[in-house]
Length: 258
Image (cartoon, rainbow, N blue to C red; front, side, top):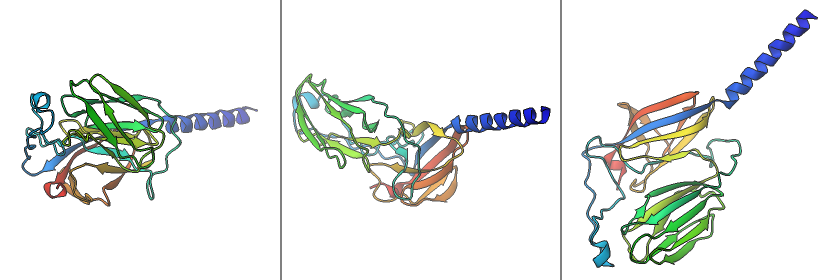
């Protein structure tokens, strides 16, 4: 009887340990830096609604590099689940609402990260009218005008295969991107080039993909903490351990950007 009891307790402990391991998650952190002298973003001379838009210091935001530390802003990183990518357990919808503002004749934020089932709320706090042209593939394309003080909600029903550009046809320098995924594992880098993705399943080798609007093609070679690494089609694998997974500094060569 004692032996059976001991074996039963041991089996229960093993099961609990396995369950705890399965429930553990990891955080991925990385800093993306520009491999070269940091470029200055070109100034924009607004040719529409100059009386209002001309009051604001507008620049081309397609490539923003921090001159103090070469950090690249607006690098998008996400778990890739397409062909040859990761297999993830089904994620519950978050049903969040994300605001994309037409603010001072530019979009804020420049990149919106969302999950299928979320809502995009496009607002216009400016004193002039704006337009939002969303060139979706999986969701219904949208193209609408928003008057001053107006807003419009767009339901993001399906995941998209790539970051979707958002453009203002009235003010052609205005551009943003919406990323819609079937899971929550994505992030965009801040002004220092740093991003973190939380809640990743620990113990899994996951396939990650990066995207940046100024990248001319595939980013196939980078330096990670000074060591050259080969990627394939903007993708790389990481075995996620519980807790922090800090990739360190990832240098993207200047030649990768148009």
